[in-house]
Amino acid sequence: MEPDDTWTTLRKQCEALEPGAELLTPVSKRPFGIERTAEDRIVVRFGDSGERRPLWREQFVVLLERLDEGSVAIEQLQPGVEPYASIVTLADTYATDDETIGYDPDAVGGETPFLVPAADARDPPERVHDDAMLLAALLEEIDADGPSALDTDSLTDLYVLASDVQHGSDRLRRSAREPLLDRLGPDQRLHGRYGTVRRTTRERRRPKDAETVFAALDERGIPREWVTGIDRDKMDVVLAVTDLEESEVYDVDEDVYVQKTGVDEDEKYSRLQGIADRIDDLEDAEGEALREELDDIEDRLDEALSAG
Image 1 (cartoon, rainbow, N blue to C red):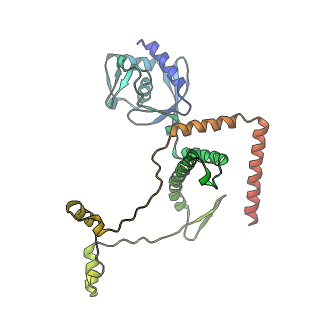
Image 2: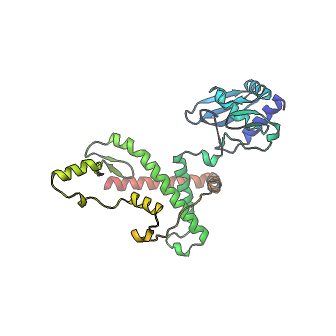
Image 3: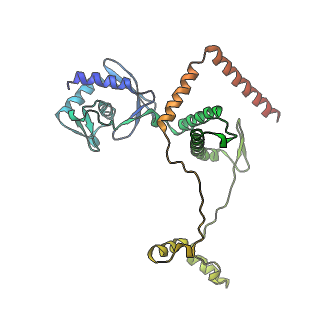
């Protein structure tokens, strides 16, 4: 394919990417998004730094001519060339494997290895926000106080979304722990808008090595058998290599529970887009009324907290 034709194809492919989709650079794995295209450039923005950078048509032509002559080793790509290489793979006729990028007219319809769909490109805080929005929208549609009366689909969605919100918020909470500990002194409390935190110390004990423990017991005349017992790991090895039955050495209780085995991120993202579109479709008056209602709620919360 001629460089001009490929350049036109690359521009169209970049313009057709769904909002929020990202590309990764082949070596450094830096995420970047397409901001806009022009006759002579494609403007990208790197997600890790916010840096905006133009990728020039002339440089694409140089890379395309080199690829038409033969494959280029991915590990030899310089940082400045990496985003060019990622975008080139959007054209069907340029393929890549784990080691090289090259011209391959038979690769039509192949995968684009450096493209990250919008649903997967969100960072953890965005995912928590999105899952919470989906859960809130679902709770408006169903009666969560009477789960037994829900249809199976709604009940499943309630369980999956609640699980996603829980796990995502737990990860987010843990990420906030260390910065808070750096700001909390002994016996100090920090007050936020929605609550208060304080530094708490808990002791976790673990046995010293057996030699140290037995020496301390022997020094005080305490029989070693008082602290020795069955080692579960050793017992499992015995079960694996002998004809000893599990029921002879273990009491086994069966615990039945629901396990989340999959999440349809594409469906969740599509639903989020629908919610966002409905919000955008609000008339100015309705949107203003909603903002005023939220402001009023916040004012009343502030008054209640200050009065307490």
